[in-house]
Image 1: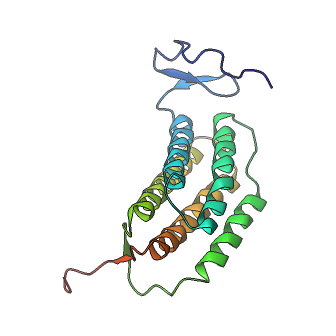
Image 2: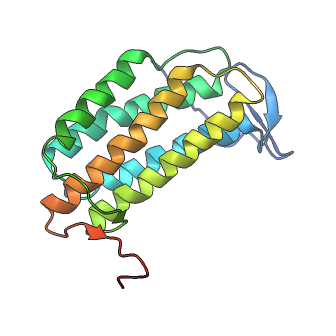
Length: 183
């Protein structure tokens, strides 16, 4: 395959611009850059989750997702490129349904917590929601395939379920929200 990055710094971004995968230069705060940058941040947060001790089902769910997020970021970084398909969204749904079926029904809101691994997963979930918002913002300016938005939406749902699985497995339990009236 060869070396993809022979030099880490190029100095071409010193003027506040960056290059997209098709060679186009845009400002570093362009909605497309914000979208794929937040997807990259999400992938890094999932790396933090994977650095924790996890139930095997959670690890098996997250490892392919990291690769898919890298592909999704590539799709956002190269206008016109397609990497995420309906089959990726459907795979998230199957995993979500399988893992959620093993959990008790929710009767209260859950606060982020439930131990370090679960809290880290909650952080990844919130970054996923922000990535979704950034992509939706991008759709107001440029064409983005709907599979990308659906993937991030479903992934945030899956991450919520994974938070619950982790909290229950690690003995931290789920931190339930109490309204001001009951505190």
